[in-house]
Figure 1: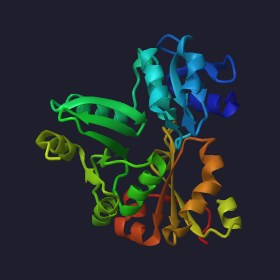
Figure 2: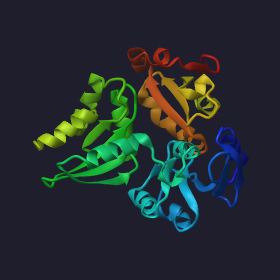
Figure 3: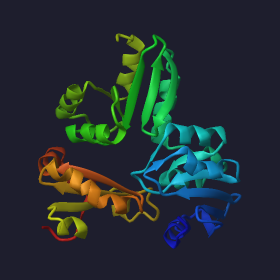
Figure 4: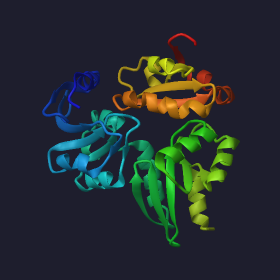
Length: 211
Length: 85
C-alpha cells in the first residue's frame, strides 16, 4: 500500500505537516497542532482479522481500508475495537487527522445507526456481521440481519445491489436521513422478504415487537 | 471509462459530491454511471473493480429511466466526465 498517491492525499489536509511511510502499510502522520499518530492503511476487498492482526498490538491508532468498495468482517471490526483502534474506510482516517484522539474516530453513518439500535430498550445486542450488515437481537429472541444503505434516493436497484453485496438480510435501514424511498424499492424488498425502514421507523418496528 | 467503452458498455459518466466542488480533500470521489438499463451492471462492476480497489471511489449506478425519475444529475449538480457516447 506504500505509495506516493496516498501520501499526496494526506498532505492536502490542512492538519498534516508531514507523512512518512514506515513500512508497506504503516504510515506516520505528523500534524501541525496535535501529536503525531500512526495509521495502518490496507487495500482489501474484504478486510479480515488476518489483515488487521499485525497492527493490533502496535502503535497504530487507526486501521483504514483505502478502497471505498471494501468491506470489513465483523471479526476484523471486533479485533480493532478490542485493541482500541479506530477502523473504517479512507474517510475515517481523514476524520482522524483533525481529532485529539484519532483512535476514537468513527464512521458517523455506521456509528449513529449502531448506537441508536444498541440503546433501544428492546434490543438485547447488536453485532457486526460486516461493516454495513448488523445482527440485531431483539429481547424476544428474534435476530434480524440489518443492512445499512446510505443512498439519498433509494430505488429498487439499490436494494438488489445491497443484496448482492451483503448477502441475505431481513431489514434494510436507509441511513441517509435525506431523500426518499421509492415505491419500487419497497417492491424489490418485498420480493426478497425484506422490510425497508428509515431510522425512526426501525426503532418503532423494534419497539412494537410484532414479529 | 475507456475500459468500459472498449468492452462495448455504453454509459454516461458524471462526477458529483464534494470532489466535483473542488473540495481540497474529499472523503471519497463520487462517480455516477448512467446505463441504458441494469442488464450490464454486473459487467460494469467487474470492469471497474480493479480501479475501485485502488482508490476511494464511490460508484453510483443508475439506469437512464431511474436517473430521469430521481433527477439525480440535476439534484447533485453532477459534472459530465468525457464526451457523450
